[in-house]
Image (cartoon, rainbow over all chains, first blue to last red):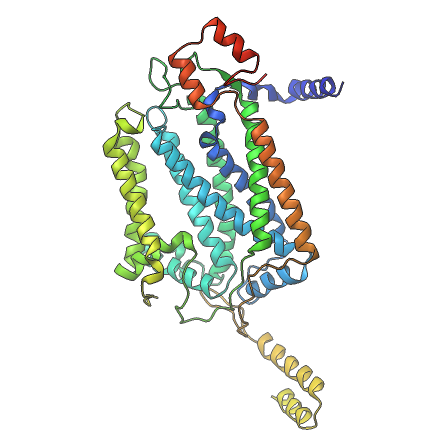
Length: 351
Length: 116
């Protein structure tokens, strides 16, 4: 009885909104965890949007009161300590899952023809996640955040005239904090939503990439017609389950390890270290100065952008792509090593 | 400045409460005259120390912890329940060695690689 009522309700909605269009078939391998990492990343983004909407109700984005407003919301407003921690840990989860998704797409050769454009959209979203993490660090407006802002300005200077947006001179009557706040709550999530929509539409257009260890279609870029399929709505249902698990995991971390708020910022000091996501850049900065951050991240993103245009062979199975695998491993090792040596490098003053 | 002088007098009289009120009032007045921070200015007038980021499992925290564990378990249970019928290994086997009618009958009855 309940099922037939649900079906009738779905039929009523479908008649008006066409939601059954989502029931298009996807190959069964799309429902495993590795192929669901993009959807899990979207779940993390959903948690960030909901908690972000709550945070902006109590956050004051002006330098005089930003740090204090973070302290007050976490100490005085019921539940906001948890909400802020949830936002912090969901951001960490998004960084990890987007990186794992990118690695999965690389290892399974899913960026190859005809999916090169969608790979570039994914790389752009990875960059936006990094920018979102960076601006979020600045917003708490403690010593660490203020020093991060200093790097933002100095790296903008390295671009010369092209970096004017990052300069305080661009709008000298407005605090840079307010402009970064606008970027964090409007520009970055707004562009992410647009790119996510495009990403999803292109996945539908090109269909889910084939699993390289399974037989493929005659064209070599699709799952074979013999592979069983399930409706995309089943894929969404499983993503919902993974999303719930993620919410629970970040909730536990939020209670047991909430983020601190550092001291109010003082100009002229450079004494803090960045969040772990940026440690590899910090090591490069200590070795080569501020240009190390620029060139290091530039090389990483150039490699990611160039990948589908350089590696044009149709082979997808990792054992058949020794050069690509070796290069990918080398990049990952370099990032891991630069991250691991950070605690042992002496912090230099660059600002 | 007169506020600070009054506070000093109050302190000398041993009236700490009045002294604190007068000092806070004088600071607010002084800070209120500052122009708002622009550009890269910190806007900092008083440097407050770092807050502790450690766990605070009071009643509220415990409630959120229990709810989070419940949501995690529910998500894991649903993810397991909604898992695909075939693993990649099953798919590889069935796609490279198509099943006979006999195999299909076994899978349909809840045999290896299939759920009833």
